[in-house]
Structure formats: C-alpha cells, structure tokens
Image (tube, rainbow, N blue to C red; front, side, top):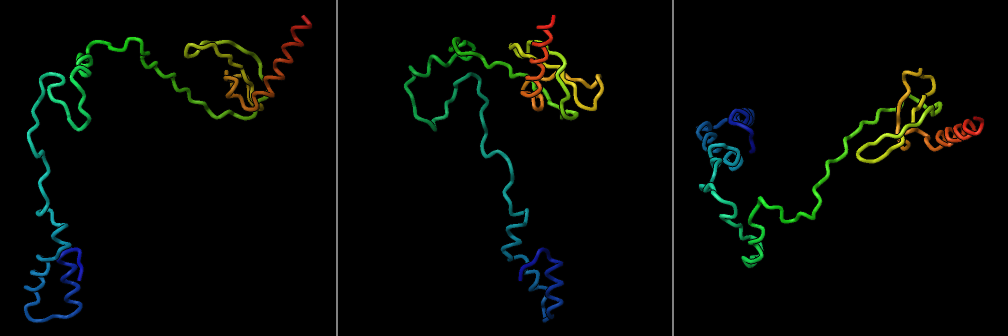
Length: 168
C-alpha cells in the first residue's frame, strides 16, 4: 500500500476497514516505509564542503596530476604568466557589431542612389532603396545582399546610370 503522506494513508486504511490497534500499526508502517525513508529530509546528508581547501599563495603551487606528467623542463617556460610567450599569434579581433536587419516595409520600387562606406575596416557599397507604396522618408540605405530581389534592381539601377552618363 503506497502513500504520499500520513493523512492520505490513514484515509485509505479507514476506507478499506478497521481492526484493533490499527493506529499503532499504521504509524509503524509509515516509519518503516522505504519510499518515506528516501523522501524524508531528515535522512539526507548535510550539504557542504567535505574537506578544507587551502588558499594558494603563488601560481603553480599545486598541480593537478590527473594528466600525463611531463618533464619539468617542458613546464618551466610557461610558468611566468605576465610575459607574452607567443607574440606572433594574433589577438582575437573584436567581433563586428551586430546590425539588426528590420523586415523590409514591402517590395522594392527602385534603387535611387549608391554610396561607399567603411564598415568594420572594409569598404562596402550601400544603396538607397525606395519601397513600393512608401514615401521618401521611408527610404533606407541597405547593403547589396540585404535588398530583396537585389540582383534585379541593381541591374536596372546600373543600366539607368549608364544611359544617364552617356547622355551627358
């Protein structure tokens, strides 16, 4: 007969039937119940450190030996942490800023203008894009790879620029 608490076990026994000294037997059953013993917090071990950990004063004062042991000659050149032992290695460059790309306000009507900007140390061409059913104040500067159907609109823009330059 499993139970979740003394009360629920008592309710179950009373609903099944009663006998002489049932209360003492119920208390004894609950005390010896394996499930209760595992769930009882009094039987759990206390949390905490098992041993005192000494505070170290110097680098490499102790070494964890759960790895292959190398001769001391191989370890010595790397003991001094303040020196740069590998000056030829490049430092990690700062990652480029994450630019959130907003959803475009609709299909592209045309590309109006182009400009060159320097972003993250590289030259990049951006295009002023006008969207269909949008006013001029909604025009956006976008990179070539972000423009929806960019290859089609860029082809038209470049052809327009060529014909414009040939007439002047």
